[in-house]
Image (cartoon, rainbow, N blue to C red):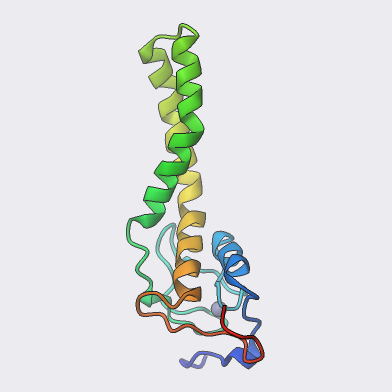
Length: 139
Ligand SMILES: [Zn+2]
């Protein structure tokens, strides 16, 4: 297998940052959409198995977790308020909400990380080099 990336003419680059984000959220390579982006739960592959894009350059760090906490917190806050104002005890509310919050965070963390990596790649943030289809103007 070649170690160099396939040139943009040989793969289908996404049309914009939203299609790139969707590819990443589906845990596929944002550049080509063909191969898996992760080799373990939150560990990206070193290089794409199809287009050879180097994903070891990604620096998503804790940002996917912050996004997950922000979204899950806003989804569950109205439920907590409704339960408490409906007369449920704090312990009952905690016993119901905490497992739901943990499950939601665990389920959404990998797609969120894929989307963040795709966003960083598309915009050329960090060590990524921005690339577009040759016929398309930069967005
Ligand atoms: Zn790829």
